[in-house]
Length: 130
Image 1 (spheres, rainbow, N blue to C red):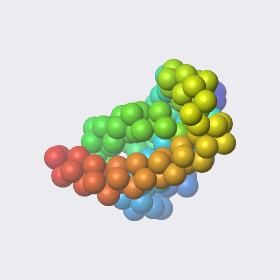
Image 2 (cartoon, one colour):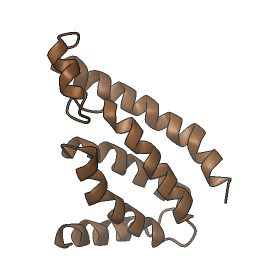
Image 3 (cartoon, one colour):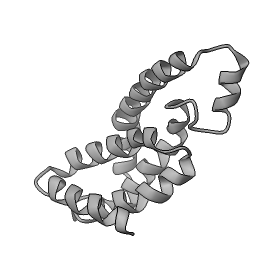
């Protein structure tokens, strides 16, 4: 509650002057890559989803239902971002096939690739289904 009010208030003011498309892309990027600050997808969703949806709902031009779907699609992508993003991450690291540094590097690379695919492929399809 208290944690969510402060960033939501500042973010809402920041996005007030942006176009709906720019706002959605920026919110998707912040939502996806803020996962680096969380130890689990569940913690991330619980803390960030309500704030992000509240900011999007503050712009009447943004279709909130479709935007919520786009946010939900990122949950499947978050597993590649960090070595601790999902329960399988530590198993991969313990196997010795990749190092921790490689895991972080590959997570950043694939995170960017997946984000571009989400925005370039999935977003137009989802937003056209209004």
